[in-house]
Length: 238
Image 1 (spheres, rainbow, N blue to C red):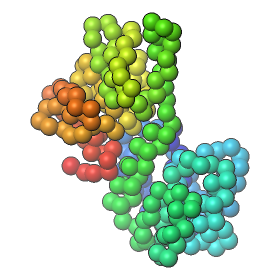
Image 2 (tube, helix red, strand yellow):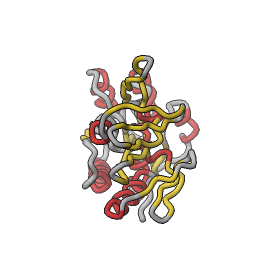
Image 3 (cartoon, rainbow, N blue to C red):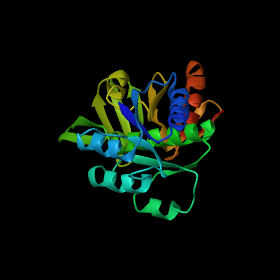
């Protein structure tokens, strides 16, 4: 579950951002919820109750606790929230580095800008979470993080994991393996292959070229799904 927060003291702006979020996430196999806040104080109260916000659209100019101060207080509790400042001013951009903001979006809100930034941010959240598998090897068990897996191949009754550190084999099937991973990162492109989209170098004809040079086939019936999901993940439309 990804929690997306919107903090703005203007109701119409919150609704505008929310509509853009709903349009971006529609028909995507990603569980998410949207939380709305009308001021920075409510954001901090929410975090103080051990709640998490994965992505926060945060207005800079607000009465009371402004956006920059809200971000500073937020960082005292949470170092991983992706902060996207929403602003009509530019003079505080340098301060964003202090609170590790993801980026700025200028008012008036443009839906296509919200969508592009949100898509990229969703992938960043998935990378940070770092789900992992415990793989049984000849020497015992090895922990393999999903973010380090380049692709997965089914060979007979075995599974080959191609990772940044090398190759591993284990018993199982693709469905069991991928059910443990973030759906934002992985896609099955063929009955025998699942790829991690962050390592895709290019899609060429009916093949996926991975960063390590591997060429992975795309089934005819999977081509549109693969292309759509890949371009979604990098914040682009076809």
